Length: 235
Image (cartoon, rainbow, N blue to C red; front, side, top):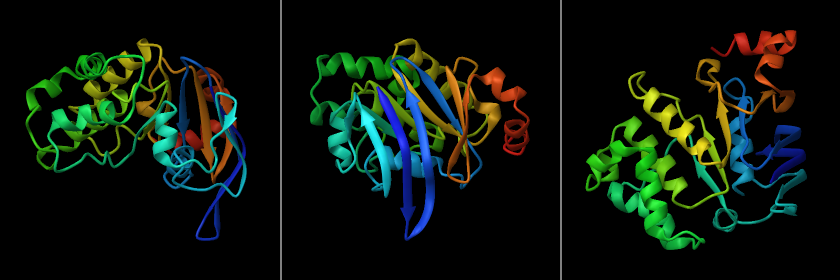
């Protein structure tokens, strides 16, 4: 599905990503782990067309998407929930979640896509008419992920879905991500806290100073001395 090959990205002339290589296969959940500032968000935004690579390739279903606009990439079936959530403040929860069904057609009816979002996060049914500006951080995060899901994506990008949240809401978010995984959708999740890596991930990629230094199973990462040293400083 997704293949990143030798990707270089610079921001304001400063190199941020260096020769990044990463893949996400159909139905896989891959966790991108790294310290704050390691390049996780830059990679996510590059995948969504918000940063233009200076080298390398991003392939989706075998075709390059480098140079495509974010809305075009979303239209291809890649959903994105950014770290900041970025819920539409002037829209209600109901409108936020329904919005992607207005702008992207898919084989599934809009009602079915919306019903799935509420099945993943049933608590949102209590806030249907609440405005986006009236939500807590955890509620915004649920709306952000649910909204990305109603796009009916084949791949869902989650940038630090647990960052800054109350410990009380984290199990709800984790359960929602697990149910999305159970739906068979591919997920690429960035995380800086190793305690938040789900047990059901397919593979782990560790990023350090803009480079992928490890790609493998969770148990392999735990045995790798370099990875262990880096990961131990993330918790």
